Structure formats: structure tokens, C-alpha cells
Image 1 (tube, rainbow, N blue to C red):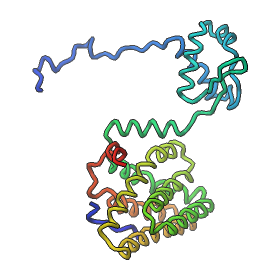
Image 2: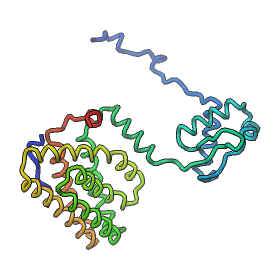
Image 3: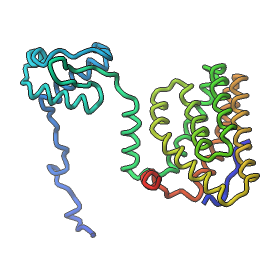
Image 4: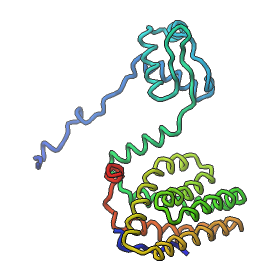
Length: 277
């Protein structure tokens, strides 16, 4: 059974001025400068595996010769790559530039920054999960059911232990959804869920805390128990390799839970939520 709906969480331009000229509406062409070109080449080598984590880049003198550029150009390229956390530069006689793997956390951090700047609402975040998680439940049921049962059961146990503690419960609930997506092995979705995870946890903690202020412990426990039963049912359907059943059940769950978490907060933006934390 899906979680019930928790009600009460609680200057005008002239026509001529509005028309840009064909020239002014064209986007300026960006011509990469030498440091960007050098950084691009090194970045491509790292991504392609030609340079591996822990490798040292060649000395500056050799890179200058290979790329036909000056020392300041090489050093500016290094600064670009350092900002991307693809290299770490140690100065001095025994220094050098050490290669690192691309950091997935940068994807999450930058995506979250873009969502904040666009004044994306928290409701949009929960709506996004509602759109893709039911299909993920089907995929997991058909591809890694045994592993999914083990992982999701372990996360549910953490939820049960945290049932009376607002912040740990909010984190554990969010972790259940993240674990489900991670089990799918779909990397674009995994990076997306990582980007919005902090938003989900922060908002859920706020909603749970507000609900507990206005309701007694028994009422709160009843709500969480309903959600736990729904998660147990999903785990059971996955164990049976019932893709249709898992998708159908999780769609009903996500419809109800999205309404639960966002009712009364429809206009709340990610930016405002994180500013108030």
C-alpha cells in the first residue's frame, strides 16, 4: 500500500525595439585559445585512458615542444585541468602534474548549481523521480533481482531503526530510492539521482519534522509503517522477478509519495530550501 497523502504539511517595448537585428541575434563564435586547446588534448587522453590515475604528465619543457607553445600556455592549461580536478600540480624540483579520474561529484555539484540558478522547484525534483523510478523497478526486477532484494532489504532495515529519528529517517528513505536507481546500472540516472539526493533528504527532513510537530507519535508511526509496507511489497515483487507488478506498484507508490512530500510546498525552490537549511 502506498504512503497516504499527508494533508497539511504545511517596461513595455515598442514593436520595432522588440525585433533584434539579424546581426545582433547571432551567437558569437568562440575560438579556443592555446591553453584551452592544450587542456582539451590532455583531457581527451585522460578520458580515453591514454593517461591513467596516478600517472605523471610529461615535464613542462616536453609539453612545450610537443604542442609548440610557451611555458605560460602550459601552466594556464594546467590551471584549467586543476580546476576540473583532473590533475594535481606539485611545484618544485620534485614536482609534477599527477593525473586523476574524472570526479562524478563534480557532475552532481554542477547539476545542482544549475537547478538552483534556474529556480527549479522541489516539486519538480520529486516529479522527475516519479517519472523514471517505476521503469527502474521493472528493470531491476528483470536484471538483478537477487542483488536488489539483498541491497533494498538492508536499506529498509536502516529505515526501520531510524523510524523515530527525523534526520536519519529522511536520509534512509532517500537512500532506498537512490539504491534502487543504482541497482539499474544506468549511469545517466545514477548521476542524476546523486545530483538531487541532498535536496530530497533536506526537504524530507523538513516535512517529517513539521508533520511531527502537529501530530502525535502514533500518527507519525502509522504513516511510516504504511511506507515501509509499500517498500516491502516492492522487494517481494522484485524477488518474484515480476517486472510488470513491480513497475505498477512503484508507480502507485511514487504518485502517492510525490503528493505527500510536495503538497503545500509546490512553489518552494531548491535555492530557497538550501538557503534556509
